[in-house]
Image (cartoon, rainbow, N blue to C red):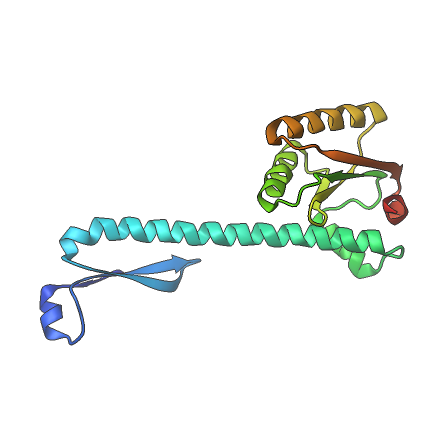
Length: 196
C-alpha cells in the first residue's frame, strides 16, 4: 500500500528495473492496481501523485455511476413486475419496502414519450425531469424513448400545471416534443389496469 521508489542504484543492482516510482491505486482501502512511472524520482514524484489521485477519482466516479445504474434498474424491474402482476407476493412487498415505495397511497401513472431514439438525449431529459421531482415520486425509464412517473399529487389542477410546465421546459431546453399520457388515480393494486 506504499509508494515504491526505484533509484538509479536500484536500476544498476536489479535486472530489468528502471528508475522511477510505483504508486499503488487504492479503492476501498484495497490495492487494485499500480501505476509505474519511469524517470528520476525527484523529477516525477509530484506528477506521479497527481496521476494516482486522478486515476483513483476516475475509479470512484465509475463505481458510483455503476451503483446509480444498478439502483435505477432495480426500480425499473420493480415497476415492470408491478405493472405485469395483479397479485403481490411477499417478496414483491419486501422489494417495495426496500426501495421505499408506498403501496398504500393512491397514485397516478403518467407516461412520457420523446418520440426519438437518441440515448444521450434520453439521459439528459430523464435527468432533467428527475431533478425536478421529489423523493415521493417514482420515475423510471420505460423502453427506448419513454419514461413512467407514479405520483400522488393532490389535485387534477396541480397535476395539469406541473405537467404543462414540465412539457414547456423540456421542449424549450431540448427542442423536442414531449408527449404525455395521463392515467386515472388508482390504488396501487389496480396500477396494472391503469397502465393498460
